[in-house]
Structure formats: structure tokens, C-alpha cells
Length: 171
Image (cartoon, rainbow, N blue to C red):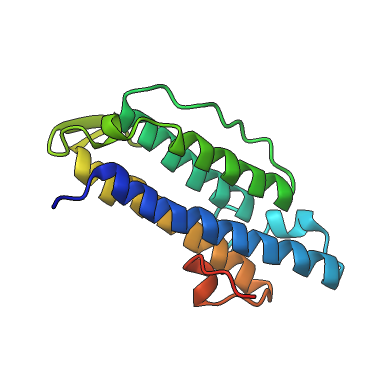
């Protein structure tokens, strides 16, 4: 039995989206109980030359929605970067999930070994097999930016652990 690209994407992205929702929910609780302005958290970064939390979350949605839309052969839904709060970021993740889940699974999974050429930075393109594009570009970027969002929130003292980045709800 083979596993389709769509099944790989949905399984992994379900975990990534759930993890982001959990850590952003914990950040909201932290801001409320510690009296920290959410603007401080959404603009926090690990290093002066790194992107802040808000961009990390936006990039998770950008890579997943654009990438999976490209695999499905459709134009991605627009997700303008207008978020200013933790609840805005959670809503963005919900929109990304809805957009990805609305894509045709058969179109995403079609011909995994076929090449796909895609933009990879300014004035640059890359060509990978569709399977490598999903596993080594879309999902790798989603995991990188989600893990960085986790690290940013952990660095300010929010109690987060491995179960949170794995998307496991703790009651």
C-alpha cells in the first residue's frame, strides 16, 4: 500500500497547525496572567537578525498554503499579513488549515515523481520532484518556522514542552 502525498501532507500539517494553536493559546494565557502586552510577544525574536514570532507563524501558513496549492494546480487563497495579536495569528492558522483541507486530494497526490518548478527566493527557481517538494521543502519549512515560533515563546518564559510542539493537548 502506498501513501499519497495528500495523506502525508494532511497528517504532518494537522500536527503543525494543532501545535501552533496550542502554543499560541498558552502565549495568550501567559500574556493575560503575567500582564504582558501581546505586542511584545508577537514582535519577540530570538536574535536581532531573526524574524519575530508574527512572521514565523505567517511563514508556516504561507509555505503550506502556497505549496499545497501549487501541488494541486490552483492559485492559493490570499492570506495578507495583517495580524497584530495572538488571536489574529490563531485565526490565520485556522484559515491556512481550511485552505489546505479544501484542496483536491487527488490533484495534490498526482504523479509524485513528476518535476515541479517553483520560486525559491528572489529571482530564483528550484525544480524538485513533487514528492521531494512536499517533504523536503513545504513540510521542512513549516516545521522550521513552527519550531522557531515555539522557541521564541519558550525563550520569554512560557511553559512549553515537547508535547506542545507535537500538537498534543494537555488537560
